Image 1 (tube, rainbow over the protein chains, first blue to last red):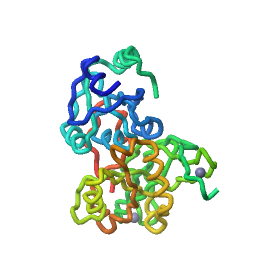
Image 2: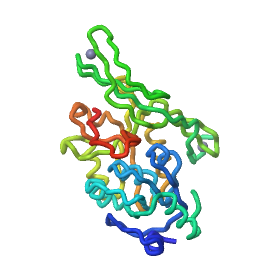
Image 3: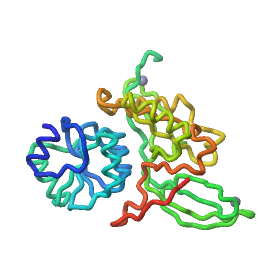
Image 4: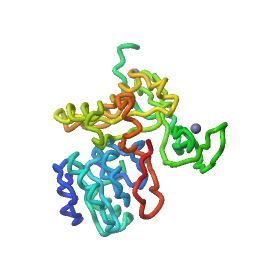
Length: 111
Length: 180
Ligand SMILES: [Zn+2]
Ligand SMILES: [Zn+2]
């Protein structure tokens, strides 16, 4: 499964410019330190955090995309930084719990 | 043993806080790791220390899963990403140079002020670089971790940002204040 498949199947919005890539598992956390310690390459990272620091954290652990839940407004500087690093920032109005249920339904499991 | 190519994984992970303290008298900065967040103020001679930030972070060591070699990183205060704030900064020069190779520069900080005279040794930074590259698909991009000493005298004007959880527990985090 690729980021393109996930976006189409769940109806996510793409906020940044990026190349699609394979998705491998899901990591749910609102803490950068958790992500740095535990996320794996190719994971989808589900969070409500929107500060631009999510971009270097996502880049460092090589997640396939960051999905911002609950329709939270993402600052332009976060999107600009993501564009610069080819990091996928996706967004949904669903709360994290419901999104994770749908991802699970697609056959994606935790990292 | 020296033949081992080392496959690193995190060990001894400890979640806590990095505390940034500033003195209103001499404007010096001190940082340390604490298991709890604290907002103490105290006097030390002429110095009046107060805490400017408590950022959630974690400590870890790296262990080779093949040969069990352990490298400790208790001196690592955090990783900072360059915001291209000063064109003459050596980190910015490196950042531009490596951008073409899809290699992304991160700056490792030790705890201040000790790190200014006792920086994290280069071989440890190389291990950290290896570790984060082993964790990623390096055909797409790589990371390279360099020492904060490269910033040199420009440090006091650096507007780079740490990958730390600053104010992340509040619903709408306010603008971060510069920590350096
Ligand atoms: Zn080894
Ligand atoms: Zn002082």
